[in-house]
Amino acid sequence: MIRLSSRYSGAAAVLLLLFVVPLLMALVSPRRSENCRDPEALRATSQIRGSEPLGERLGARSDNVVQWSQGVIHTEAGSSPLHFQIVRSHDWRTHALNVLKLVDAKFEGESQQLIDAGTNGRVPVHVVVDNTQASSRLIAYSFMDGAENVSQPFLHELQEAFRHFLSGSTPITILIASGSSSRHSIDQVRTRAISWIVDAAHYVKTSCGPSA
Image (cartoon, rainbow, N blue to C red):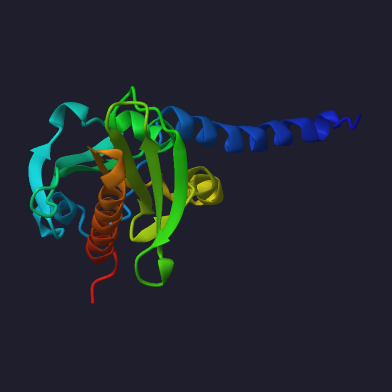
């Protein structure tokens, strides 16, 4: 065991406090920063192709949750509409790691895929299907950090931890599309849900990325 002489112990204690105090302050009262150039534009969900906004879930808003938009995704005539949510939250542990519960706490995901969708496969979309009910149910979702697509939020947050400590945490954006249908037509729901998420991701990039 290495022992510090009394001559250096005081300096070591000061250095330790200089490191620990700001870390504790960041954990207890974390700083927030914005990662989107025009965050208010993200609330104009009618700009996303095929979207019909149903407003904001104001009761879900908090210091951590800065946006919770919801609405309907139009489909082909005769098909059941899908529903969408756009959730922007600093609390990625609660929301990004429990996306299915944001839609339905009783959802039983039986199969899950990670699909590289969009042009050149640049939009990672998670697709989960539940066949335990009379009709099949599907939830598709994708993550973004500002204008950047994220496939695995846990690993992403680990990589960004030091930057967030220095400049403040940024909200993660979760794009969610969900719907149900008979089992023989669930593939149509899947295709439409993925298509909407790709369009929504493009809109987020346009709103959050640097201006042209």
